[in-house]
Image 1 (cartoon, rainbow, N blue to C red):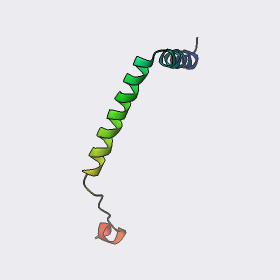
Image 2 (cartoon, one colour):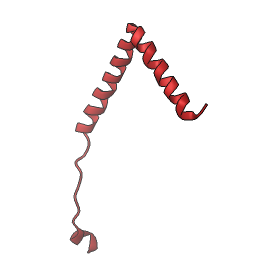
Image 3 (cartoon, rainbow, N blue to C red):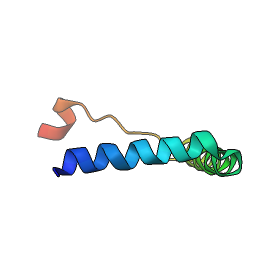
Length: 59
């Protein structure tokens, strides 16, 4: 079996499992939600990007 078919089969099995099991589905949703919240808060505290013009770079 090719790697692509194996990957698609694994994804399909995972989706089917989550569709049938509400507790597992809720756990995955909360985990993803927590990841998004963590990544969103860290991007706000990041330092601003500094622009350098070509004139400054050449000198």
